[in-house]
Image (tube, rainbow, N blue to C red; front, side, top):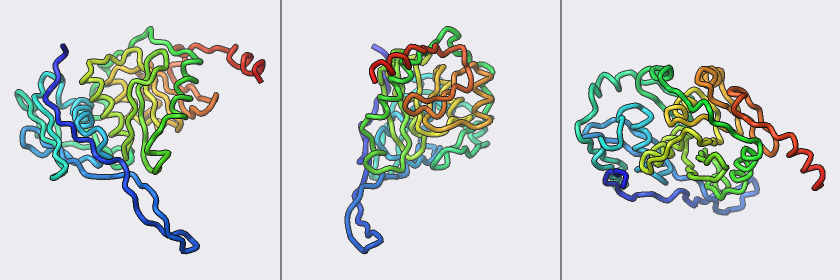
Length: 281
């Protein structure tokens, strides 16, 4: 059995009902997304405060430590314990984090909703990442993924104001779906879940409702994922990093429409899909 650290199970309510008054003075109630601080302590040292929905705080913490390159192996972590009464999570490691003061001294505030940040040089490890050169995605699987997201029950449909991320198999089966106030939190939570389940990303597809920024591309690459999809667009730096890595970026994915920006050799076009659709119509 794969190693798993000792974990609490402390998901919180994702929405809250509030009273509102409209332009006619009518009173009603609506649901709004929860947002709460989660301060991360590693070996009793305060590291960072994350603003989160709180749906998967243990996975979020693990994924954050993984994607910040602060902890290299799951075996290095003894326990992750969340306590919402003090809005904190305590992480215990086996041997501490080497050079933690130096490695967390420089912080880059990212474009992520909720003010995401990364420690150290944003591009430090990009040159060492190698994605599976043989990974391919068919057009029909791409459409299956987009349609799955379209019908997925979500906090966004109920209350809005959140981002969602999902991990899919090469056949288009949804493996994880996570929502949070910022897309950087959602991708970290999925990274944590992958770590806990020993899941490799070499043939997986990652979907986000948010922009494909450099932060999202680098985190996807650190997870070994060769395909990043979004219903939104990309940024110049996100495009540059993906091109450097040979990663496929697919933006504006809605219905049958998409824009393939990089890694064009990875997508297998199926022109017959449109012929079949016309015959059915």
